[in-house]
Image (cartoon, rainbow, N blue to C red; front, side, top):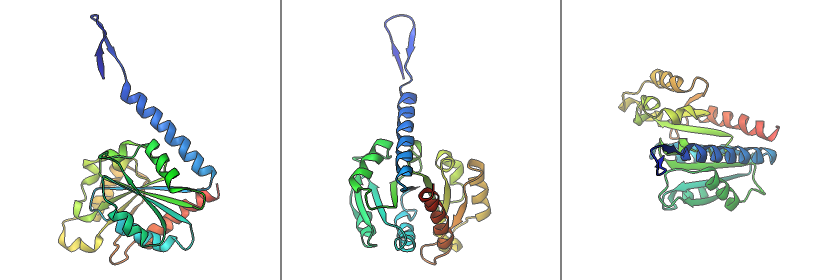
Length: 229
């Protein structure tokens, strides 16, 4: 942002950079605090309608008997997803963002406090449905799981680079509808690799169960890393 200081000189104040650096520092402090308590924090991000909540119910079904899990449902409004997750039997709270399309580290900390961590091993944040804003803010999570639904197309990593650059792992969802869409698994992986050379890519279907086991096993490994650190 630029401001005139009353003279011929131009004073430039780097407000965005300062805010971002402070937010990132807060996120790292939160990450370390959770790690010290042996709590695994997962940030689940994707566009609206990609199947986050549906996939999450499948993940919870496989993990909830082994770990004590809490879920933070972040939405602009409504409690539809929170009520769906509550049916799985895990602890859940609804976060309304009052129109904000992202979750900052401070918002993340406040949600964790509201959820309560005393009896939890794992916390999952279902972030706002958006392929842009959520990627710009570090929530303090140990892992960022990004979903790409098959109907969206295999070119999304090229169009929304930051989201896939910050991904720890990518799950392609709704693979059961592949006969209807021109989607190439090879192109999808290639495009993810252009943005992120190391993130594993899982092809999943909540309807058929394809890939769910492999994705859950990946998450188990990450949970155990935190618990055994």
